Image (cartoon, rainbow, N blue to C red; front, side, top):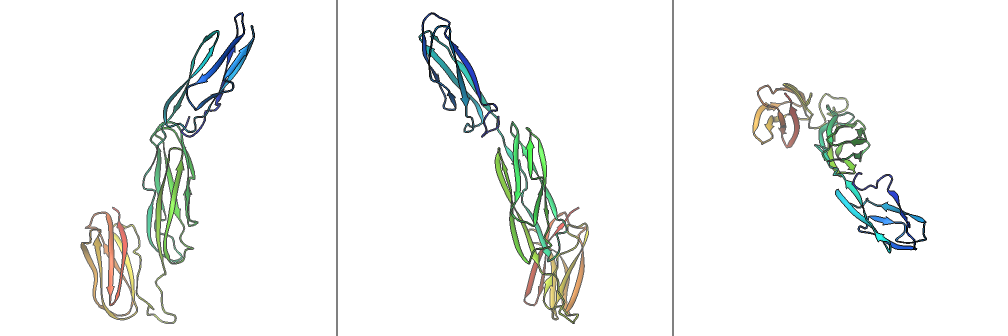
Length: 290
């Protein structure tokens, strides 16, 4: 039976009978608190019998083997019997529950708007549980599981950020199971779209767009906008902070710009690209996936 549950059924009976020539008087004792009997004493006339019901409550027992002794003792002799319960070890094993969807512009979904993780029963017995999310912009499929020993279940989390206002969002994916609980955080940063001042072709503010496609192999496009002329520098760095390449540098007029980065000479991984323009600085993350 799984940890935290009772057997089904959780009762049985045995019979005490007086097969002698005198009144049989005795008691029934148990050696463990998780076992109880319907009657702890009996008095039987010659030729009569009585049924004793035994009930078990294993919900508080730890995983493992448990044994109790039931001992009827009377003026006609004594006997004993064993009650056994085996509580299997149920272990929830989940990998990479959390995820970072990165940065997305208002009204859009992430380029990759879904990810998956695995739930595994690494113990014995049946592992059952449920998965839930704490935000309406996240959905989980499936929302429950029942796994035999060593079985796995793939869980898919999908993000719908198109209705979110600008801001940073952090929400939780939770797993509750009879073999343990686990959780992970999901992140997304929603920003306003690159904008044009009404009636003009000049941007009304500085902005650095999310590269597209992302992840990519090997070429991606990075957009940025300048509301005024000035010196700029757009560079790419690896996750250790070492500069990989400078994509744009020098004096540029106000306007909209798009540059391409060919990452064929760098390994797969997470990279950061940064723009500096006057007092404006912005950094975004991109992923090379080969």
